[in-house]
Image (cartoon, rainbow, N blue to C red):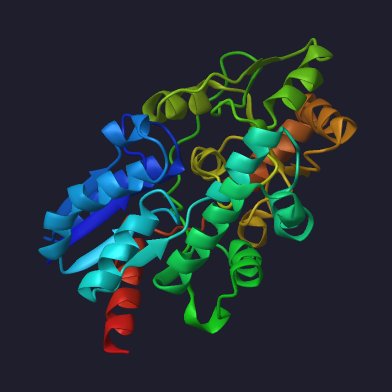
Length: 332
């Protein structure tokens, strides 16, 4: 079948949706589908609104010839893709990633609001742009096939955007087979991330300013570099204000690398038996976790727990589940 994937970012740009789009494309091609990816190019330099219109017309020709359409966000490419679907009466499956409204709100206001609290506490403070994004996202979600990767995010979005939970779906993220572990070269905690407010890197810097036994690496790097850094690092540390199913943690598990992770994640029910979890707003909690992992006995204990985690969810399974959801909705 001809399949279209729309995504705001795609390699070499870094980020979860970028890697997801690439891996999804490869997995679909292995099943002998013809896959086209439409992503932002010049749109990145256009104002909101104009950007959506440009992407709408850029995507129109391939949209018309595609049998199945996947969109990998809820606003940037999600809105113009679903609008095309409404006009031409073709269903669009949206696989949600993060939360664009929350992310840009945190970046604009510099307020460290947890994702799970955002819609309950911040709606009265939305400016005009926030209200427009909220309204557009709500329309987009209510007029598409919505697939979440975690129940945690589904509960947040169902309440915030007036969705019917039973009419949404969950397809978990990629959990790869274990690779042979590699020992660390130096006591480096890897916290690489885009330097955004919600990533909470300033808190991480404060923690490591008082740690003399280890160092912190937080530069934003591409995926292949990230995998090499994970293998060479002492441990992984992620203390963001909200992460749905963080690839860095899933890769750490796959590569048998101990980690410290924020409690504000959607995959706790899946990976909660391994790793050390912290309150991202509590400096002392994070500091104690780092010190705990620097203890050789505790480090070995965490390492053994991760070695015992063997759940997998392959890209072949992910593509089959997404296609099954799409076909089910077409029948309905």
